[in-house]
Length: 89
Image (cartoon, rainbow, N blue to C red; front, top):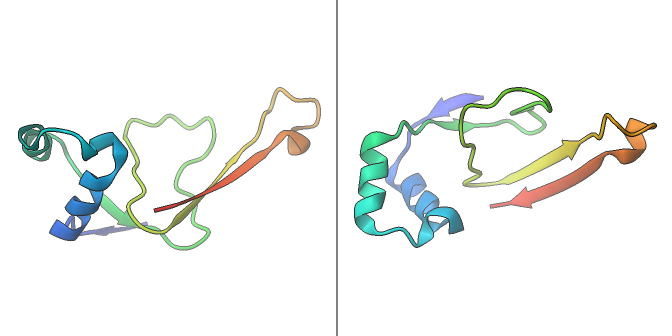
């Protein structure tokens, strides 16, 4: 992953996401002032997170596609119980 600048274009994309869309403008300004935002450009097929890895951040897809693979390790045949989903932003 390569760190990139959090430009006004990306801020506008962030505020269009349903999670943030209906927030009051004052709340949005406060979030910008008090939270740390870091943007990354991720290469195709690059792994962002792995299952069972502790995550202390909120990851939001602003552009592109994201593929998620989940394996149910409790299943007798884990590969047959895997789920794959692709999201687009």
